[in-house]
Amino acid sequence: MHKKILLINPPFYRLMNSHFNGLSLGLGYIASVLKNNGHEVRIYNADYLNEDHYANQTEIFESYENYKSTLNNLNHPIWGEIRNVIDNFSPDVIGITALTGTYKSAENIAKITKDIDPGIMVIVGGVHPTLLPDETIKNEIFDFVVRGEGEQAFLELVNGLKMEDISGLTYRDHSGNIIHNPSREYIKELDTLPFPARELYLNEPEGMDYGYIMTGRGCPFECTYCASKKIWNRKTRFRSEQNVIEEIKHVFNTFGTRSFYFIDDTFTLNQNRAKRICQMIVDESLDIEWICDTRIDTLDEELLQLMKKAGCTRIKIGVESGSERILKKIKKGLTKEQIRTAVSMINDVGIDLTIYLMIGFPTETDSEALETIKFAKELDPTYCSLSILAPYPGTEVYDDMIESGVELPKEHWEYFFHQSKDMILTLNIKESTVNKFFSLNDVEGKSRT
Image 1: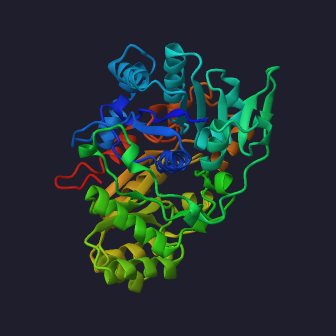
Image 2: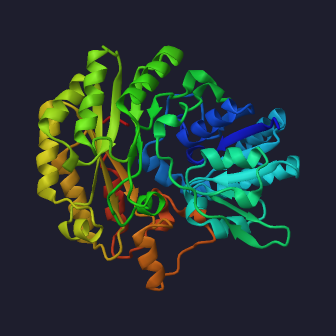
Image 3: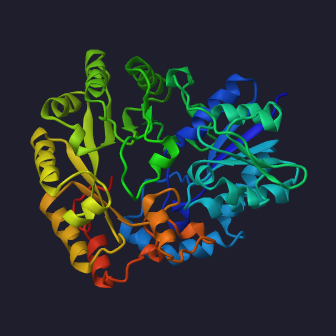
């Protein structure tokens, strides 16, 4: 039966006087599958603003109290806008994606939806509900939780398949009992998925960044601060190189997009595959530029030269800490000398560099945090992406803290994100050090991406 379905990415950065105009590729893939099966579907990025100015990380950190007050005030204009969008579309089904930091925001959207019409089905999915489905479905504002890859489970649910037959679904039965159906197997052939339905976004196209592309799913590494291994079981699947190139051409020809962001956890995990993608971009004379996230131990000079030739303008790498002890403790699998060597290689090739840095790890001392600041200055990247450790559910850090009896504000998942003042969990780091850390980008001319 034909359904009207609205998929929503909750506001987050807008609550801190900034915004996010990129894509939720997860919602984009679900939307494509639903559309191809006869449903009327649109996507709404509630974190979108049609403007160019973004708050820097210090400004975001300092907007924390404003974030909390906006989050808890359903009379704020942001929530009024969301109410109007839902009301005007008049959906049968709302689908919401939720990270841990956007869980409360997703809950607000569900409340607004049920206030408009209690009969609208509310489905929630994404990282947080996947990792904590029991706790999520206990919140009766949500009707269903879709765990893991959501394309097929979402389709089966709105098509009216019996709930007990839908793998990856969590729900309450007629007696109020919580039912977790068996997990759904990972999609074996990612090429079978249609391209994300960028054309279905309700947001104004002028400000949208359509260039987000996923070329593979999963990560084989075991960093203690990341939940990826719980979600993907350290398995990685790739799309074919040709399928990736076809999507680039589709986005370029449809939207005129020239700038792309490969959002894989580690774009160059398979070096030969990355080289083939780059060579195909060169061979087909695609007039594009792009950035990617990767690890320094998956790069070599030949690959870097080919990446630059193919239009790579920036590489983002995880450095995390300037302390060798912390690097070992978080199972990064890298040494400072390896990082120095790779950064030098990237600089020699002439590609801009962003490094991810984090402070606030359990047992980290003030002097170790200062080591991180010193190391960042030594590496002198184009930009530093700065975070306070957030012990997300599904991470080894979170599990260790719970086992050790640390009390975490679990009833306030909205505090769990990387610029949250409530996440400075070690008292060993001075406020002055935190301020020095967040001032790493306060240099005239530093790029903001």
